[in-house]
Length: 299
Image (cartoon, rainbow, N blue to C red; front, top):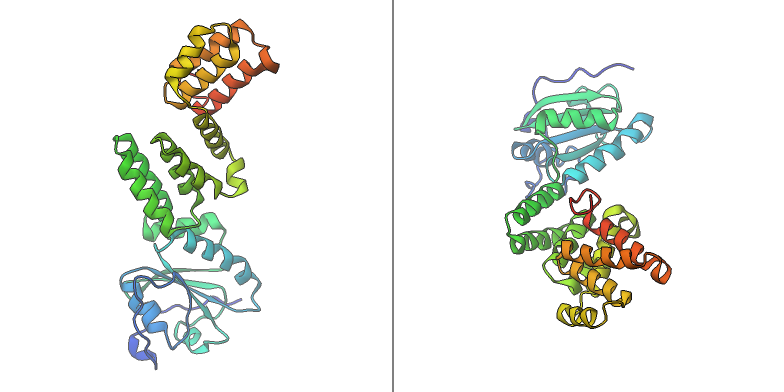
């Protein structure tokens, strides 16, 4: 298979017979292009956003392996670059201009100029290296939003973090990890009902993940929060009632009083670890999972 002799520059706009309206900021990041829209969607658009041009063909086996990976990265990066797909059989004039002699051939344009490219179906790790070389560290908008929200929370600005996550998840419905973080922050802010609604819409796979199960435990504990003063009074009046002690301990944990809640739960376990089919032990393990096994209190 011969390697294409690539031009040292991107073709000028005059080499295209037709012009299309310019791309706007809301344009899709994965597009099919031909000679009629190449100027607008590739040359002009690359002045503001890098464009990766994938020359492919329906009969090309390596193309079928490469295309899904390129599309995955384009969706993941959500605007960091545009993936422009050119079927060489439908657009032979473009293949001729760029001297494409084998497929897949991938070219990267920035500022209206060809800057780099590669031949063949590279594995995902090498594709990421290629893109990061020209685009910088590949941080998706979803990752950036979660990072910013966590930073705001660490600064004690949880209300701002919630506002950011609400706006982000509204615009990116498929970003379930950000929805999970939103639910966790809502619960921490005392908005249990809204947190439950967000959690209920998560996929089964995410609910079964370690983070999803931890959130489920937090939501269950939140439902048991109850009236701490009332529970404290019941425990004081009936110190040997382990059922009430366990309820009080869980409510304390749900209220953010982790150390005090663990003390109550440990006290119940010391009195009778086998009570109600091992309920004290189960309550402790559940609490450890919620707080995190690396939490100093758990250690």
